[in-house]
Length: 126
Image (cartoon, rainbow, N blue to C red; front, side):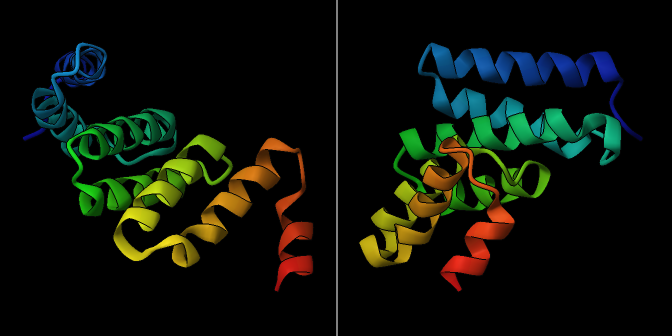
C-alpha cells in the first residue's frame, strides 16, 4: 500500500522546511518517508533528486558524511549536472577519505559551473 500523493508531498515540504530551521533529525525522518514513497518514475525524478539532495544536506550538517555521501550520489543519479550536489559530495569525500579522493568531484562541479560540456571534459581528463 502506498501513501497518498498529498501526504508524500507534505513529508517532502516539511522535511525541506526542517532544514531551514536546523531540525536535521526531523528533516531526515520526513525526507526518508518521502523518498520511500515517491513513485520512481519520470514525473517524480526532480522531486526525488531534491529529496535525496536535501536529506544529504541534513546528514552533512550532522557530520554523518557516509550517509550524506550516499544521498548525494543518489541525487546525482537523477540530475548528474548539479554542481552544488557534486560540491557537497566532494566535501563528504574529503572529510572521509582526504583531498585526493575528492578532487574529481570538485573538478566536475567547476566544469559544470563554467559551462563545459562534460563529454568533452571527460575526453580531456581521462
